[in-house]
Image (cartoon, rainbow, N blue to C red; front, side):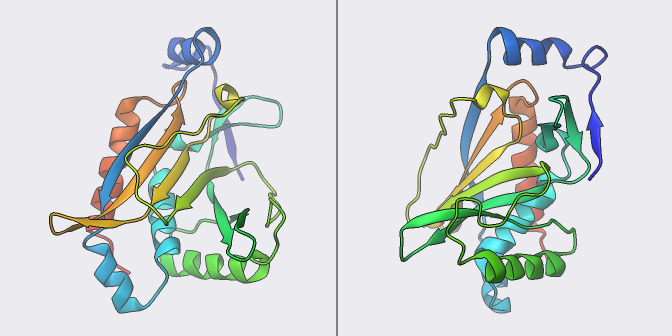
Length: 214
């Protein structure tokens, strides 16, 4: 997968990156509710699984914004990947534990959905932390807490100041004012991503959901 190294000396975020990576290391998180009222009936009509649908939509928007495809290469150079794949938690009911799986992203929904089902079938019973071996570093992280809603969520990462991919966490969707809402927490590194980029992401995500067609 192609990796595009950023020239830190000519990058327009040079000073911001230095400030929030070295001088005042900083990450931040934002929690919002996504309106999925128009999506739920479509999923029920198709009789398909909810999680891979929302995982596809999330992955599509992530891959449309460079700020959400940032990472370090094997030589610790900052850059962004041409394409990133979702790495997500898979819950094991019998042991109340989870493993990490990942699925190759495709802009074609049916292809991605089939990839997800195949990964779950092949690796879902593997109770190792890395249920599916990670081949490349072009991933972003998704977790789900489908047993409860929340109004805020934050991960406290010891080495988070050197971690640049975004982290997304979904909660249990709920009904309010005749809408179906899905809690979503977004955690990013401030060196590569500002509030503007997170707001842009949320707005693009909502618009994509509103107009989504299978």
